[in-house]
Image (cartoon, rainbow, N blue to C red; front, side, top):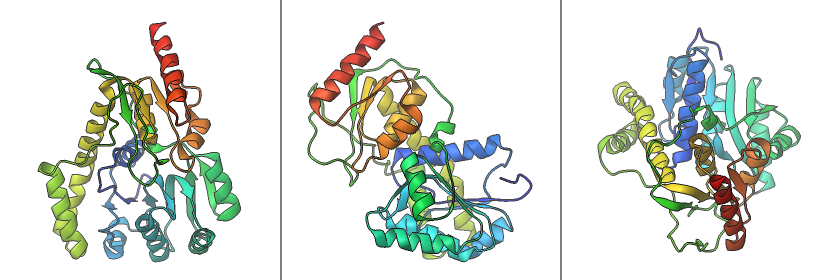
Length: 313
């Protein structure tokens, strides 16, 4: 991360996933601590423009946001990654910490082929399974590093909890499937949808304009100025949801990460393909107020009871 030249941070999460906004803000915080300042160019998957990026970054480095979209599960993000690698063969490109997941061998081979064409690509991964897969199956320079949401400051909740347990459970393709019945009869929730108005509405409107014509500089600059404020608001809504519970049960990875930052006792379940377990085993298994549980009411009930005894002591 040279501090004497511009850099780019690509793949802004222009959608309501609180965890991906936490990752984005964690990256900005890390770069700030490194003395790099703000990125000179940012974009989401719909607003990428190679000419604008080249004009903004000069010979600086290009960073791709971290998360869990490396591989075949989320094709739009993988397609952006491929385009950037192809468009910028002479720039250092750094993939910030990701979990790797290939459902088909063809996707892994295609990824290996486009990455191997770049002379200066660095891949950071969040877990040891991804590290092995990257080194053996992709053949690129790879290191393991924590999820960048951990770069956010720890901030214990300021208001007392309103209920005993918040059940934050996925409703997308990464759920383990089947309806999970909370042991206290409460309805589970997922990350809240973005508000329809305010800065969120402005960002959606500008995203459509820039996607239709990415060469228009003024709308693109204005859009980029909305990125961090919207991410902060989205993260704040996630914090508020989690802080409402004395305890949390979640299969959302960043439900877990944010509970660690907030100091909230919680039970972590796996997602559909083992991502949560891999990161838990790599980084957070010794956090005293976290309990791992299999996706069954009995296992969760035992873990919650253990946490309550911990709180009582």
